[in-house]
Image 1 (tube, rainbow, N blue to C red):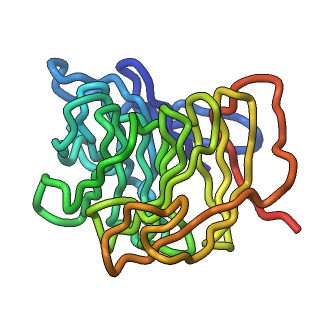
Image 2 (cartoon, one colour; image 1 turned 180 degrees about the vertical axis):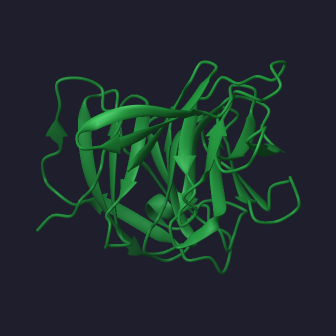
Length: 244
C-alpha cells in the first residue's frame, strides 16, 4: 500500500489506495541540507515496513526510518568511493544488504549491527550496474557488469566469483533470479536481449567458472533457451514471476 520515490533531492512516500496515489511523507524535511541527498536507488527493507535504504552518487548508503521522529535518517554507511548503482536486500535475511558501485565493487552490510563498515567486499570484473540476492539461496548473488559479463558470487567465500560468463555484447544492465529456482538467472542489456541461464556445479578452475578459490562451490552456466528474446530497446529492468 506504500511506495517510495527517490531521485534528485527527493525521497518521498506515497500511499496507494483505491487506485489513487497520495503523497504522505517527505523524508528529507528535517534532514541536514548540506548532505548529498541525490538518490541513485531505493529499496525497502524486508519485514520492516518503515525502513528503507538509498544509494548516493557519492558512494554512501543511507538508511532511513519513516517512523522516526524528526530527522528520519538512521545511519550513513561508507564503503564505496564511486556512485552506488544498485541496492539489494536479502528477502530471507532482512539485515543483509548488498550495494553495487561504479568502482567495480560490491559490499555486504549488516544493517542491524552497530558498525557502519561493510562485513565483506567483493571485486567484480567491471563496473557493477546491478546486483540481486538469490531469494532461495541467501548465500548467492549475481551481478550485471558494464562489460556485458554475468558474475555469481558466494558470500561464504569473498575472494573471487564462483561463476562468470560473457552474457551480452554490450553493457549488461540487469540481473534477476527465478523466484523459486536457485539455478536459474535472467539478464538483460544494451544489446536489446533478454537471456535466461541455467547454473550447474562444475569442477573448480574449469570452463566459465575458472577463478574460484579452492573449496568454493564452482558453477558453470549455459543458455536455458536456444533463442534469446529480442526487445525494441535496451533492457534496464526485468521481473521474474515464474514460467513453465
